[in-house]
Image (cartoon, rainbow, N blue to C red; front, side, top):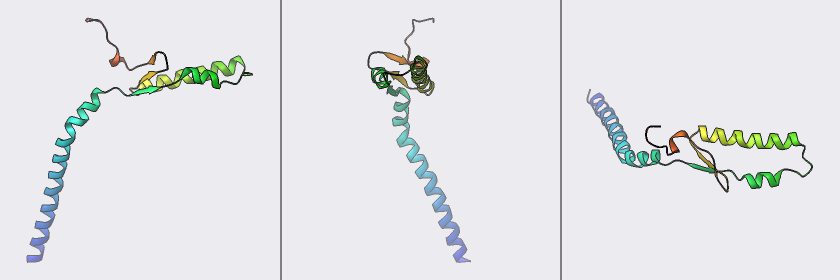
Length: 104
């Protein structure tokens, strides 16, 4: 009978320890996770390098497909929450990164 009591006490201590550890970890990570939510990740796609990589004998269809693939990738990244840049400009961005006049 004493063995079962010690087993019950051990299991109770294990459960309470796991709960306490979870609560402590959640509290410790709350502030860093909130800061991460405020930061918009950035992804740079270099359009100039893409254009240089197109073979000189590429057909207009191949060039158009390459540009469309690049734009599709930029849109996917934007939809995933990334601010997409090339070496000269913002290419695509999530809606919440734009600054709009009040009331719009």
